[in-house]
Image (cartoon, rainbow, N blue to C red; front, side, top):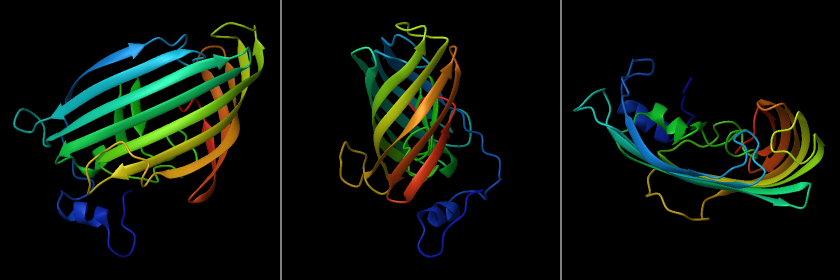
Length: 225
């Protein structure tokens, strides 16, 4: 449920200019893009890069009820250091133009699935879930991952793996200003956690972070990136 806080509200202004919440909206869009993927494993990469640039367009004159454009660019990298450590980083940004409804603000259209909100286990582990909401978004993550146990060792996809995590995350949105690469206005935080992997796709993890809104505990069923 979407709601406004007391006082001036960007959401309140958006709501006044759009149909009532709960009214059906036909959001029909098409996407085109390019993806470069050299990761050794999709679920829990230990080396390689994933670079993607995707443009999405919805046009009510062709089909649907809304018109907007969404451009998403992301770069992720994974570098093994020795036999136990992996350094991982991601920078992702999305610019929206046109007249997108508020509901479209929640997602970034990555090629391997939508990235939801800014804040929470999917984007910024030092912020509450969906803490930031805006048309355009910027998020950066840096991880130090230490594989304390892996069976069998030395393979990209083990039977079992236990990993300790140290992280620094930052994020911001752009609502009334143009999207740009910047550190100004970014909300920073960091923390640590643990991730357990069983076979290829079964994950269970927990991170504890601290940021502008205090301590945050996030449950994970997969890697943040």
